[in-house]
Length: 623
Image (cartoon, rainbow, N blue to C red; front, side):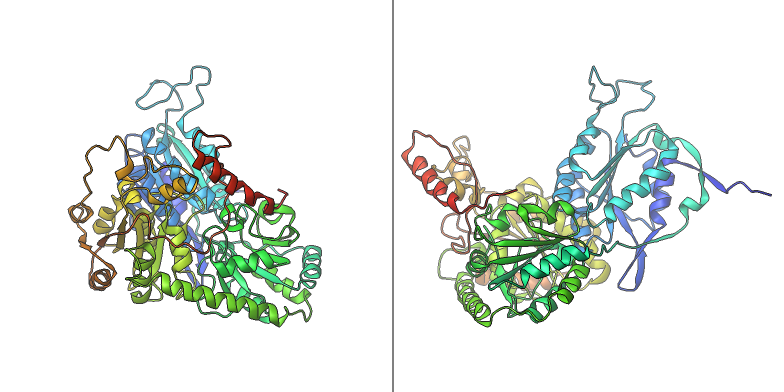
């Protein structure tokens, strides 16, 4: 006698939240919820149905109320990055501008290959009340709405038009977010009426499920071909990208490099793959790299790239390497593994490195190659030591970085993004513990700093509550998005925020000047329409949001203020003015293709164009 499967009648919103609460993952032997909770701002498009459902599961899926949807998305991305893509947060926003505010954050998560689930209100499926508040009407296509814009910046997109879809769409969204090759943001558009529609869901759909992140074994023939090429190398190098940490393959990469005597250079996303003082660590590579890392790159004959998408800042727009250098790319994503005529190894970094090691025989790099490389690293270490020393020039980013680096705990997490700070942190930060640096440069997104710091701190407090999350932020990014200082105070997720004020968008002013142009519209002082040259009182502003705040005059005062911030129980903001012209790290750069005017009435612009284009002869051909 057959029996009908047991069902449970729930709304779409209730089914989504109940399913999320039942998903688990095992991390380092500990079983924990896959979804760490969510960030939400309610509006008419999500409060009545999704809000009702979230209320009933608030103890297992904590909901953090953001101040801006874009900031919520940044926080979710930073949370996922801290957890090495093994856990995620959802973001819920109302229909219309609430959802639209998430577009930038979704693009950031997409560029950085980070999981984030967006649950956004949508217009009524029945169309009976059309046109509704905040609806965008497309006269020839009534199915087209604002949420369709997310198709360009998500890895998975769906609109729930019937309650039964949840049974297929939600697991598919999670599978995408957990896939090493396709990882990225997922989006579910939830029409306001459909959110409340009920259906008889299979009860087993809500059974607890333990997820595992797939480790794809590499193809044996690809490994053999790569090993044969690497075995011919007289000057080998390894590029360590962010994928090394996501694959939890830091130990395997280090052991492989040590066994073969191959020096390692790091990408921006791969910063903190190796400790600063490891003898094989040659420093960062590329446009925001190091002299030692770029020395290695331009002389290497075979380069093993592990877990990198080989972005232009890594490759110097493909001028950082010899044109006849051969690439081997180990990556879970086929798209990345085959870039620039690389020999691909499509697979997990941990399994790939193990397999490559087994196929490589007794190969070891020539000793003089490593000795020469280490001599270059010693020179770079000397430059950094001088660069971060206070008193040798006006206040600088590098000096502030040096102060914090000397005083912080090795396990403290560093967060920065966009502007000049990614280059300065990448060049001058000396890694004290693996995986402690979050430089968001995949999307180079202003505003990530404080919001991302908040998300990272939420994640950090789950496992390392006694450590600090330290945010380096410029005045431009602070003015763009600062309200999550208040979020951190409200939620008691302490941050230490350094606001380094150089009077505007100084790094773009530097680029403007380097291309022969006069300063214009970047520094406040050089903005013709800024007729009132008032400086922002960042200290007073931060205090108004509940933070401890103080302004310091120099790196020595910064050191004392930082110690006070470490001892404090709540968020602290420390403000210091830095020089917009003389405070930059001048070494460690590679060429960057930026596009300059081919003709101009300004001789300085024409001259700068010729200088820039003269480096193009080094650019590798290929795709």
